[in-house]
Image (cartoon, rainbow, N blue to C red):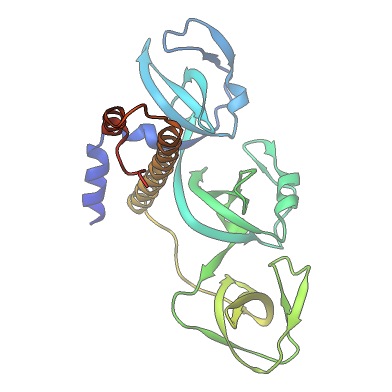
Length: 293
């Protein structure tokens, strides 16, 4: 099945245009306003360690140049190569926490991220992308709201494991219950020693989320909970996960556009005053009658 999906992906035009990359080039190059390289509008060092998307590419003077986007904004055209960009693979619906034992003085590609790591410590984080740098697995993570993405090594993260099947843990009376995984706000405690449903847990830690009467709480247990599941996907699997995620995001984006257009059409329809029935029928021929009372 994986090979079949890859064939579908490869048959689509300009599949690389939909890929994301991290820009790591340290050799200073110009950024131009167009593919003719007529006007210099900046330097590529402003792209260092940023997530970029190729919106167009061509070859000029035996060099590959591409129009790059950052956050859906066109930055310009610059020279690219295999050492300029590292492919990112989208990872959907994965969360985790930075390990307590990691060194907070952290840098990537000679840029210091110590303050960013400090800001994310003890908090649940969202994992967006997986990539390989210097033959080591890395991740792009952010706050849960998706802001301030930073690159970290995969071994700096303990992932949140969602429990699909029914699973329980015995908790004693008086065990504190917390509102968040930061354990700053105690909201209640276990009233009765018994088995409780596990909703999720942070792998290789003693941090779990339980469910009581359809409400969720964070607790700490005496023992570590470890899931030996492997997420060492091969490149083929990463390509498929990325491709499916891309299709899902594109579909969601199109649905949002349709909703916006429908709202505009509804407002236009509601604002029109008709002189007579023939005029109304003529206009409705183009606007449709889906908004009629």
